[in-house]
Amino acid sequence: MSERLSLIAGSGALVPEVIAEARRQGHQLQILSLQGRRSIEGIPAVRFDIANPEPAFAAIRTFGATLATMAGGLRLTDSNRETLLRLINSDTASVGDSAMSMLAAQLVQRTGARLVGVHEIVPALLAPEGLIAGPAPSAELLASAEYAVGLARRAGELDLGQAAVVSGRRVIALEDIAGTDALLQRVATYRRFGFAADGLSRLVLAKVAKPDQPHAVDLPAIGPKTVANARRAGIAIIAVQAGATLLIERQKLFAAAAAARLPIVGLKASDG
Image (cartoon, rainbow, N blue to C red; front, side):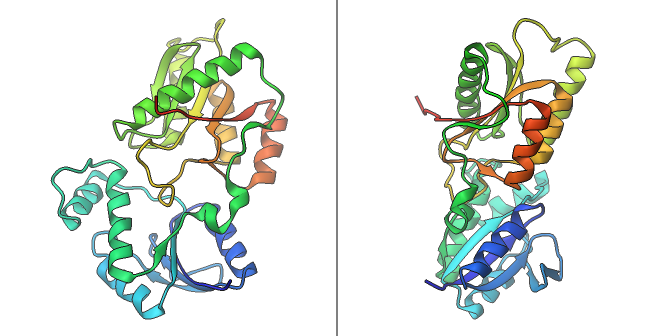
C-alpha cells in the first residue's frame, strides 16, 4: 500500500537505503534534513532544526504524511539535549537518548503521522539470530559475547550508550555520548598502553537497544566502518541484538567481516 512518508534524515549510508526502498514501494516521499542539506538523493529537503522543530512539524502536516520515520546519525551536544528537555517540558527525563524518544512522541502528537522504525520500511535491515558474517566463533568467545550483550543491556538501563567492550568477564569500556566509533578508538588506545592487553580472553564488542527504547527511534546499527574500527581496536567478535540492530550496507558489511575474519553474531537480549 502506498503511503505519504516523511523521512527525517541524519547522516550516513542508512538514509539512501531507506529512500531507495520507499521509492521501490511507491511511497510519496518528503525529506526533512537534520543536517541542513537542501536535497538528499535528488529530493528537495526541508530543514529539521531540533532546537525549533515546529516549522518541520508544520511541513509534515502540510505534506499530509501518513507515516514518519527517522534514519541516519545525529550528533547531539549537551546543549542540544538540554534544548530537547525544555521543548518537551520535562524535568524528569534523562538528558540521554530518551529525550529523542519524547521528541518523536511530540511529532506524532503534532502531525498525526504514524511513527515507524526504518526496519518497518526495510525489514531486511534487522539482524537475524545466529552467525551473521565472518567465521564461526569458538564456544568460549560466544559465551563472552553473551555476557557482553547482557552488560550493554544493563548499561542501557542508565540511558548511557548502546555498546560495551569486554574481555572475558572484565569490563573494558562502555559507550558514552561520543558513540561507538569513539568507544573503539578508546579501546585501541587502552591496548596501546597495555590496559586491554591481548591475553587469554579476547575483546568483544556488543551493541544492543536500550531496554525502554522504542524501536521506532535510534536502533543500534553496525556497518563496514564498524568492522574496520573494531579490527583496529583488536576486537575478536561483534555481538548485536537479534531483531533490534540494523545492518547497514549489508553486502559490504559481510565482505568486510569475512576479510577481517571477524565473526558477527546476533544474540537475544534479556532484561533480566
